[in-house]
Each structure stands twice: as C-alpha cells, then as structure tokens.
Image (cartoon, rainbow, N blue to C red; front, side, top):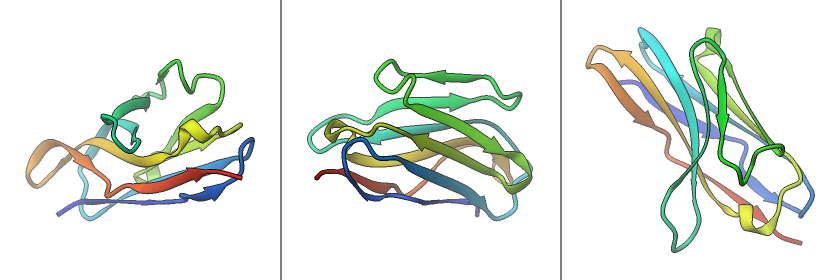
Length: 119
C-alpha cells in the first residue's frame, strides 16, 4: 500500500527557514493534487498550499509570500519551503496527495512532521 513519508521538520529560530519534503512510497499509478496542511495544538487542521498536476499553486493568506510549494513528479514528491518563520507557524505539518494506486483514487496523508519556531 502506498504511504507518504515526510521529512524536514525540526526546531528553527524566528525568521529562519525550513524545507519540508513528502514522498509517496509504493506502487503509485498517478498523482493529481499535492497539498500541505498543518495543525497547531488545540486547533483544527488547516490548509496551507496546493499544487496541481500541471503546476498551478494556491496558498492560504497566512503563508502567502513566505511559502513555496513545488513538486517533483519523477520522485512522487512534494516540497514546502517556508521562510521568515514565526512562532505561530509552530505546528505538525501534514502532506496530502490525491493519488491512484491498486485501491483506486483516494486521498493519502502523511504521518506529520513537527515544526517548532522558537528562540
């Protein structure tokens, strides 16, 4: 079964940068949209950014101008570059892919990677 594996989280100082990665492992037939979400303690999971199969991107206002989502189709991987990080960016970050495998089309989620912004 296809799994999404995230990496790149950690502790960063305010104003710093991080690059998150999410790769789909297993037998994937096709991937359409790739997205990033985050969930801060005590809050609902929120959408951050999405990139379509033809490269069109969408961002939530809170990260627009500070985040860049990109994808590498050959590696079934999506990235999220975050700059000028703020303490309020502290959260668990999740990737999501709309993909087709032996089970058909479905949304697959990563396990989450912690990002902590603190001095």
